[in-house]
Image 1: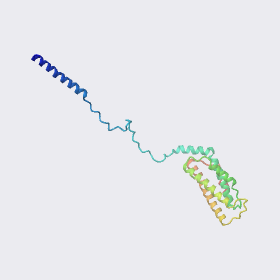
Image 2: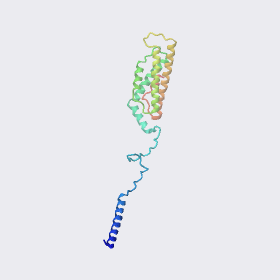
Image 3: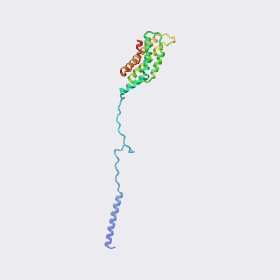
Image 4: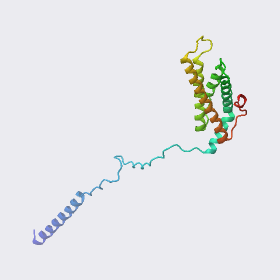
Length: 203
């Protein structure tokens, strides 16, 4: 080979080596991967739940106009009838006791009170509290009086019986007081009155 041909071959080899190195370096290089996101909330990539805010505590105050409408419906659809029946029977028993009656029949009264206890509650918390308290005290008081000397039992009341009877009438009077308070609240807060006053007829 001549000197000129040798030089051309050497240049070709150098150029080929340079091209091979460049291709080899380009294909072998790797791009750095993106760093993991610091905002990823879960391995599945699901978005983080929105922060919750504390809910308001306490019971919302009912709308007075709505309460008045509901109470009026309760009163007109049977509530007044329950009030009048319990008041009338309670007034009769109270009058008999005040007259000193030796025998008082509670049969009808128990039936009336139990019917009222199973009736729908007054849709006003304060009135319902008075009403339910009245029914409980009237029922418990009348029960103690009745049990102290049951009709037809032949039991001669002793000191213990008389003590229970006195306790019963005290409970009964507390029931009458709560009953009148319930009727007064219906009058002053909702302008609702019984069609007749059972307490006047026995006074």
